[in-house]
Structure formats: C-alpha cells, structure tokens
Image (tube, rainbow, N blue to C red; front, side, top):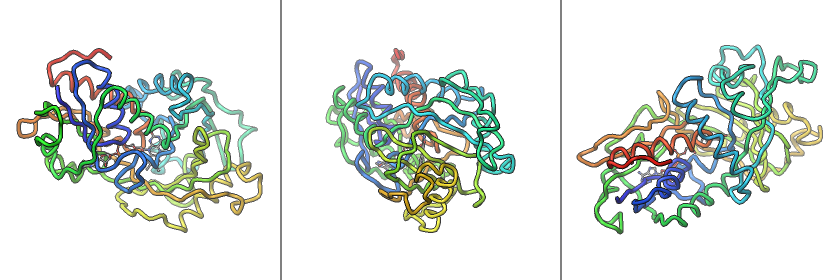
Length: 359
Ligand code: FAD
C-alpha cells in the first residue's frame, strides 16, 4: 500500500515510524518543514519538551498520554541517542490562581492525586515547610525532558532505516498529496494528515477550530537540574512560568506564554524580560541567586501550539474518494501523547485499508 504522510513534525514522524514497522507499506513523508528548520508554521522544534499530563481522567487524551509514558521512559533508559533524559518535575500551586485560565488548564496536573500518579515513578506531595514564598502546595514526580533538536532527527533516522522516503512539498489541497508525482511507487492509497496548526488552512480540511496558542521562550546555558512549573503568574492569564533543562547539552528552556489566537512570530522583548524574571524568582539557583543579568541567553524563540477545540483529531474520512486519516491539533501536548496518538492513527490506517493492527 502506498501512503503519503503530510507533515514532519512530531505527529507525522512518529506516525511514519510506527507505520513503517508494519509490513506492506511504502511510505512518503512530504512536508514544507523538516527537522533542522525553525519556522512559525512548525511547532515541534520549539517545544520544551516534557511529559506533564494535563488531560482529564477517563478521556481519550488521558489514554494517549498513558500509552506514551512507557515508550518515552524506554528511550530515557535504553536509547541515549534519542536525546530524552529523566528529570524530577515539580508542580507548584498557588491558591490565588484558582479559577484562572492556567489553573483550569492544569487542573489535573495540580491535583494532589492525579490519574498519572500511578503511571510516572516517584509521585509525591512536597512537605509544606519546604515550599517557597506564595506556594501553597506542590507535587513532584520523575518525568522526561526531550531535546527536540536531537529527538526529531532521531525519528527521521528511524524512519529512513525502515525505508521511509522524505521529500519537501507544499500542498494547497489535501488531495494534491495523491497526485502522480508525489509517491515514487505509483497510485496513493491513503494520505495521513499531520499538518498541525496549518490544518486550519489546508484545502479540503480547513478546520477553523484549530487555532494558535503562542508560546514564547528563552533558551539559556544555565542548568536547572530539575523541571518546575507553577499554576499561574501575576502578569495575566496569557502568561506562564516553567523551567526545564533539555537532555545532552540542549540548554534550559524558560517559558512562557499561552496567547490564544496570536500568530505573531517575533519575540516580544518585554515578555522575554518577564519570562526571565519569573524563572529566576521561582528558582534562584538558576543564577546562583545573582538575578537575571546572570542568565546566559542562547536564543529567544516563539512557537505556535496547534490547539483544537475538542482536542486532537484522530479520525478517518473519505475526501473526494481518497482515504484520509487525520492526526493533528495536539495543542501543548504533542510530545506527551505522541505515541498514543500515532498508535491510534496507525490503527485507523490499517482499518481503512483492510489490514489488522499488530502494534
Ligand atoms: P508541527 O510540528 O507544526 O508540524 C506540522 C508539519 O506539517 C510541518 O512539517 C509542516 O511543514 C507541515 N505542513 C503543514 N501544512 C502543510 C502543507 N500544506 N503542505 C506541506 N506540509 C505542510 N508539547 C509537549 O508534549 N510537551 C511540552 O513540553 C511542550 N512544550 C511546548 C512549548 C512551546 C513553546 C510550544 C510552541 C509547543 C509545546 N508543545 C509541547 C506542543 C508541541 O510542540 C506540539 O503539540 C507539537 O509539536 C505539534 O506537532 P505536529 O507534528 O502536530 O505539528
């Protein structure tokens, strides 16, 4: 069967990797952006990225998150070349954030007893006397942090080893991915749509319920040694505060923002200052207590999370007679549910083409 996967973000690459392990598929990954590119239409390189589930217990998203922990932990333990390492993840909660946009989004994460406490290792609450000023409660667990600059090329290598073909293409309409010049093996049997935020503009899909949630970050050379996140900031609902050190010299990511509907690609210098101030105030050890002047900045960045009303779309449909399976709209969780979503996508591909999944 000849399959074209549109998109070389974490969704497209993980789907290609899993599908290429199944017998009988000739796979082409065709995309405007590939690992190594940095662009506002390409979310994957900008992610932290860590495993910090915000999905609600009992939902499909929680199942995808749960299914993803095992494979990520396996990479952390057994495959250092993938650029995934273990770090403690501390979640701080402030009573004053109750009811704010971030606290609502983080509701499960902030719970003293979330569903994932039985999935990740070493989940526990921190004693009150150990908490910093303004923090009312906190939990900690072992998580992973992914260096996207290593992990995305690693996914490409895994795919290449399994015979996947990569090419640069820009499609105006989803059916263009089935045109005769796209797949070297001939007629395309199915197209997988992993176009992220741009699913909102791709002809034949144009899903207007996918919108950007702008995330601005600062990457610094200072090491954090653990990941930290807090339920809100004093700078408004659209701003966030988190710190994570990427594996294998990837630097420390300071975040951030969650600006819905905002497509601005350039870093806002005022926001950058607030991000650095909040990070150092939450974790003074970042600069040995010496303030933000002692942050050693590698780069400022902006990425757009592909947020979809109703969550990630994993669905099959026929568009003008062509089988299409969708996997887009993971919002701020594209890495932590990558395996679960890709596995569900592969199952739909096999279903559409009349084969049984063997994952
Ligand atoms: P993308 O990475 O955007 O890839 C889309 C692909 O489709 C690209 O290759 C693009 O070129 C291609 N494409 C689109 N349209 C066309 C077209 N018409 N023709 C050809 N090609 C096309 N997630 C986590 O799990 N943990 C985190 O800690 C985390 N932190 C984040 C921090 C920030 C600042 C941001 C911005 C995101 C973060 N995320 C995190 C979210 C995560 O990055 C996204 O959910 C994920 O990268 C989405 O991947 P994707 O493959 O769906 O889309």
